[in-house]
Length: 318
Length: 269
Image (cartoon, rainbow over all chains, first blue to last red; front, side):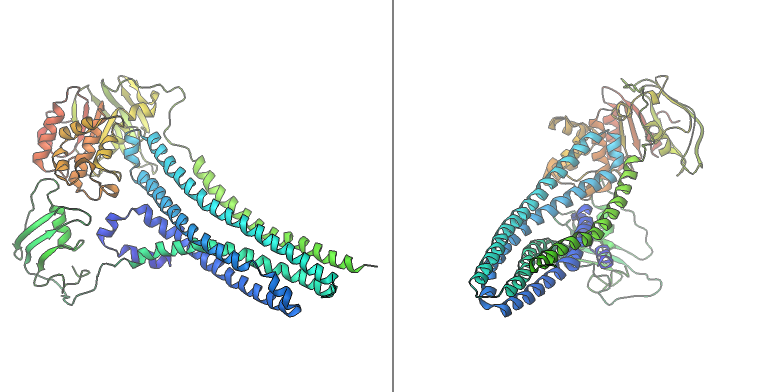
């Protein structure tokens, strides 16, 4: 999965990378990758195991005494409903937590890449307080997720504990009244532990699964991004190529910006001609070259390299 | 003889006795992981800062005055010399341009002067006193440095310029931008000073980033101004305007400018 993500990320477009903070990408690949791995290695397997445990023990109890079997599971539908409600809540909270963690990574990453600037202006204390603020926010968001978890555990432990107590008492009364034998009671007491315990864990698993789902969604956001179409197009010359470069009424706008960087640019460079681009700072010299290399896609009309435009030329060939 | 109740109790106790034993193996494995992680963290925390304040270091009240490199040698860890027996004296208010081939040690001189590194041998003096007697903070806070590959933080243009002096008002920020040159293109952008520069300033061209980092350094009102090819990606017209603006400043800092356009500078060493 990591290999795939690495390869995928390096093939994403320039505009995607300029809009996505590096810290966010790192966060998704590392932390979310781990959460997803945990989901498959622990939670997905755990849910299967728990369901199996529950069913087998329940069938065994039903086999002992059908009445006891039905009475033992009275609260379970309720627990399942509550855990679904918590699942929804935790999902939202955990998503916020992961987003905040990404912000924290971005802060760290920007501090490290700009460490010379930080040192040059002696801004270590300022950076520290910035980091502490982001980290504190992460702590608060994390605390909220934990509170949701502990609330749920508390609730399910109490309810299931009461159910267990009720089961023991009810079965004991039946034994005293002679409806079941003492041997049946002891077998039941052993089995019912393995009935309630899986359900207690199932609830936890369901809530934990929400973190796996959130991470899955966050990873899929990267995966869904379209790669640069490196190998689309049919024109693929071999050897030395010569020809004219023609810009026909080309405009270009950075993604997210409102104004054009380049507007209605037209020119022609003949084969073997050397051209120098002059212009004031920020006038679009670099953007023009980036367009030629197709690091960005232009927004109107076309650029002809030799005789081919973007619909026929392959990017890897450029 | 063991009773029926006894067997029942025995089985229960046995179960509860075995469970912690099983758990012990898991806990032990987790402890091993934690120890390994803790070692890595402690190693990072324990790594000494190579350049630190001396115990008796005092605060430099000013960097104005002459600055002197006295027979300075410098080599990085691989012991390959970068500077050997380098001497230079800069008087207050003087503009110095360092010129040399790529890899000639220009940046090293600036790194030494900013005390990002310290000389391997020889002394650097400020006002005749070895600069290691001052605290790093007091030196760094008086230096304005602009790099050829400028780094901006994500946030607005205004926040980036203000990084030079956190207490600066909006007017101060705009004034600095006027002197250093970026004011014109900033006001031409859709959101002006509140335009977001993107991560590392990605939404701007290199020349624009250079101008903003120049304004940032300018706002810090440094006593020593260092420009590391700071206007290499700025067009020559703007560059000339910036220089005129800088020279018109009332309180003149030292300038150390190392950059090819020599023709502007009266004195080249």
